[in-house]
View 1: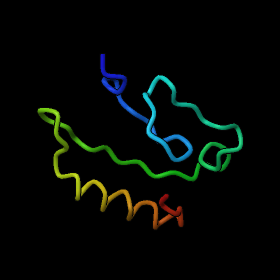
View 2 (view 1 turned 180 degrees about the vertical axis):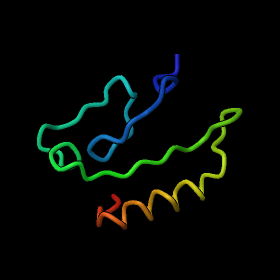
View 3 (view 1 turned 45 degrees about the vertical axis):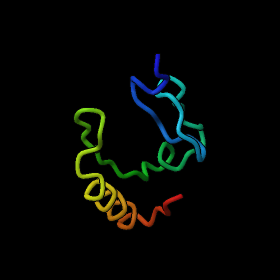
Length: 69
């Protein structure tokens, strides 16, 4: 079975299966609610308009001065 079949998360610089996702207690998003959110669609195993998704994500991060890794 594919470890990422149920989704993935970005944790401390790595992609991990969503079941391994966790939030460190001192994470600024958790402590101060500094976050941005966007969802990319996937059809037939491929990202739909990934470049648009990444542009929205980058813009959202810029608005709250959250540096991208």
